[in-house]
Structures are given as structure tokens and as C-alpha cells.
Length: 114
Image 1 (cartoon, one colour):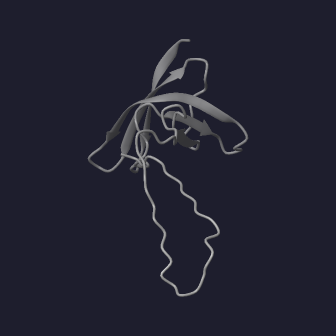
Image 2 (cartoon, rainbow, N blue to C red):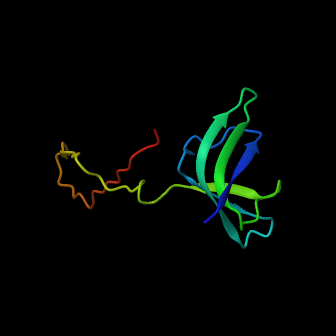
Image 3 (tube, helix red, strand yellow):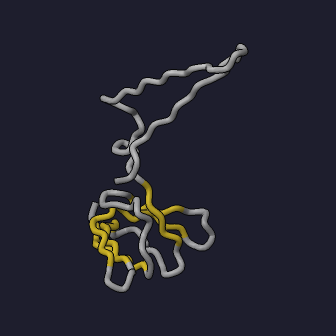
């Protein structure tokens, strides 16, 4: 598929979790159609606080307009939350003089942004 470079200038800093390889999308005012732009190739933070993002967009895709809502998504295969190679131990104590019941224990672990 033939692509062309698209340069997007945002007058503000992007979300800190946006990184090279994330996929850019846009939707217009109606919001009923989501269009994939492509993967982020570069992110440049400019001296005035604005951000320049480049990506490769297919030549047959209409580029976003100034009023389009642009957003990004992480690639799901690279950002899974399966924990490998780590473990945790937990110990629960009841220092009360009366009997109590522990109903449930749960945990959720994920890799945070770097």
C-alpha cells in the first residue's frame, strides 16, 4: 500500500503516554466514522510548547481537517498486561480478639508508562 507522510502540529503538549509506534486515528464533527491515519513515526516537542507528530497515511485516505478530533491507541500485542517473571507474597493477620472473616482478596497488576 502506497503511503505519504503527514505532519500534524498540535498547539499543546500531547498526552505523555503517546509514543512512536502508537496508531493515530481521527473522526470528524459527526463522530460516527473513525479513520486510521497510521503509526506515529516521530514526536517533536517544540520550544513554544507545541508538538509536531509525523505519520505515514495511505494515499487513498482523506487526511484530517483542522476541526477533526485526533486520538491515538496503543498496539495491543505490545501492551498486554500479562505479568511474567515477577511474583508477590501477601500475609494477612488478624490482631483482633474476636473472630473475623476475610471475604475476598483481589489484585490487578500492569506495566506503567515509561
